[in-house]
Amino acid sequence: MSERPQNDDPDPNDAFDELVDAETDRDPDLAVIEAGSRTLRAQAGPPQDGVPARPGDPEVDRALRAVEEELAGRWGETKLDPSVQRIVALLDILGSPQRAYPSIHITGTNGKTSTARMIEALLSAFDLRTGRYTSPHVQSITERISLDGSPISAERFIETYRDIAPYLEMIDSQQEFRLSFFEVLTAMAFAAFADTPVDVAVVEVGMGGTWDATNVIDGDVAVITPIALDHTDRLGETPEQIAGEKSGIIKKDATVVLAQQPVDAASVMLKRAVEVDATVAREGMEFGVLSREVAVGGQMLTLRGLGGEYPEIFLPLYGAHQAHNAAVALAAVEAFFGVGSDHARTLDIETIRSAFAAVSSPGRMEVVRRSPTVVLDAAHNPAGAQAAAEAVTEAFGFSRLVGVVGASADKDVRGFLEAFEPIFAEVVVTRNSSHRAMDPDELAAVAVEVFGAERVQVEPRLDDALEAAITLAEEEGEFSGAGVLVTGSVITVGEARLLLGRS
Image (cartoon, rainbow, N blue to C red; front, side, top):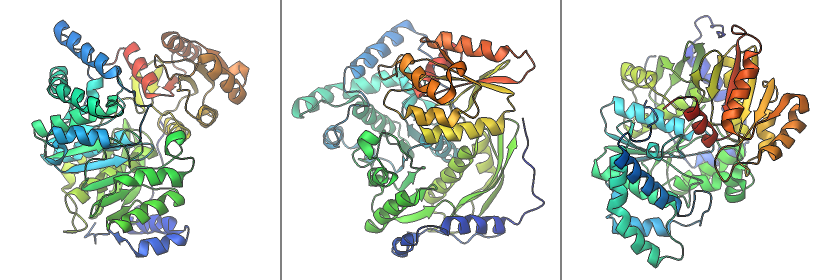
């Protein structure tokens, strides 16, 4: 593992000034937008959960499978009707559980789940009861709904579904289309959070923002992670169009925490903030990453928050993108606690350090085997692939890296593979069990165009693909430093995780 050279006692204020200078060297039209928005810039003073396995009790496992089958019989997450009418009707009849607690709402293209997990960890460290709703799941559907940092139990999941099931039929009969898989899960999450009850909910959108089923909440804090091209058939073909959909989660008088964005996307989001009189905190302006160094098991950060500097933060996740996610998560929690608006001070540094040190994000640059090292990463679009390629190059000193790729047919597969071409010595193409998975031969045809035929191997079964990649990595010998990266889809990563014995 390589170490980045350390600077000789850099002035953190100078470093942050550099961030500001870089961020302000952009489209002058944004100045007009920003003049009409309230920006959040506090004056600073002196400077794991795991992934659940199947239930051990056969009766509980059968009941959970029955619920999963009923949910699977509804519209899947990729078949959407752009409307919140059905979820609103369902929640109304359930007594509007989503209004029983404050919420932090998260959208964006990449980094949503990791950011949500960091926000949850920080809030929990300050003794708040948390509910977290994220998607998709890596291995178990129960992962999507977490209470106090742990996935909801199978028994609680089943009970929550059975509690709302009679109302599902009622709403189905009144609507043009039945409630979808995602809409039902969203209602289950909101109901479980209200029943607990939680002090705050951390809610990740499923897709987009404006018409996403989660957009029935009025998030006190709206978080927008980096925008990139994905789901272009539903959200738009440019960052600007996609930002228009995602900015729909920005509500009146909320605080908006913006990760670094393409200029066109930032413009749209800032316009929306002006329209609803929301307060804006921007990465690179009001907060950011001051420094980061590769460390054993992760990285060491100095973050600039809304209230000041947070030095010596250990984050047990790899990659610059995770450092930026950490900065966004910290700013979101500061905003939730009123830092930057009600007062200008840092949160307790030891609590922040403890929370970040405990963060986990299964399937995101996750090491699941040694000799050879096997890393899982759920990247599924070109931007995610680029971040993963940079992270694995920085964090691991692999002499040779073999890729295992199982992608969805509706993704920019060529752009995804091109991001990995410089670092994969060979690539084994395969498929996961999803009906959305790209045919391995079609994927191989694209891979051959990118890598050349001699670097591409086809193994239709994921277990065979893993074995082939590990064999290729072992060809250089036990101490060669070769590795395997499994990527392309959350489903591919989740199934690989099971095959490799992780739970």
